[in-house]
Length: 352
Ligand code: 5GP
Ligand code: MN
Image (cartoon, rainbow, N blue to C red):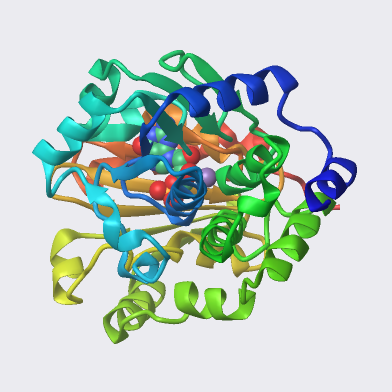
């Protein structure tokens, strides 16, 4: 009865043809691998584990494989302890991919986003289904479920399962994972979150038993003391503001990260903070890594963070949230950023 209700309440975003192809592929496959992008975020983990729990209810043998480790604040997610991390266990990940009959690629558009896992996925004989919400999906999968207007891949997973007629198979574990992805990719429903149907879905997830307040606390309020001190240091000492470009930049060197005992995930969200300054619409965060500079870009309004990411740092992403990498020194990356700001002046929204 509920699934019938869904058909009435949610618009049919995913086409009938794609639903049919996915149902078909799922029926035929026993061994299913689910892969997500490097440095998995809440939506990567949420969509993958949401789909994993669903596949378990179908009595399949699903496995989630991530290229690199995920932050501790996702370790509570049901199923997280069974995720295979490629960088820690290359042999196992490679073998699982070779043996898979079906591979779901979630929350990324092109194989490059799989980093060290890309070759193993591309070479695997399995049928591949891409489910994603980034622009410009690659052509490495036989079935491409790509809807950039949807704010999270986790939401797409919910919609997909419902459209396959299996709403009742979304158990509490799956619902918690899906909610986590929807929450994190919208910054706790503070951006990309004006679509009414998001809240129709949330309402259903809460009915299933999701404690949204508890999930918020587990993801956003369980950081280490080191992270909070590092955040304070960044804002006090390392944030540069460019009022004429409505922009701000935060940088951190490897030495600084080590000084604050940096762990994966500790700088998550730092890039967003300067957006809370009046008049700032574009912020960039650069973190020095052993072999590269990792760059995160955020904007609000119409300023194209993704164009800046692709033009200046060979990256990409969404209009308001994107990323890239630089293989230069940190100082050179900063110079490149500062030299590029004037080129994007026309994209700034003028005051009324
Ligand atoms: P984050 O700043 O959280 O690492 O990434 C934000 C978004 O930017 C991601 O969801 C993804 O769409 C995109 N992104 C991050 N890093 C890269 C990158 O190196 N290349 C591309 N093409 N996109 C990226
Ligand atoms: Mn996402």
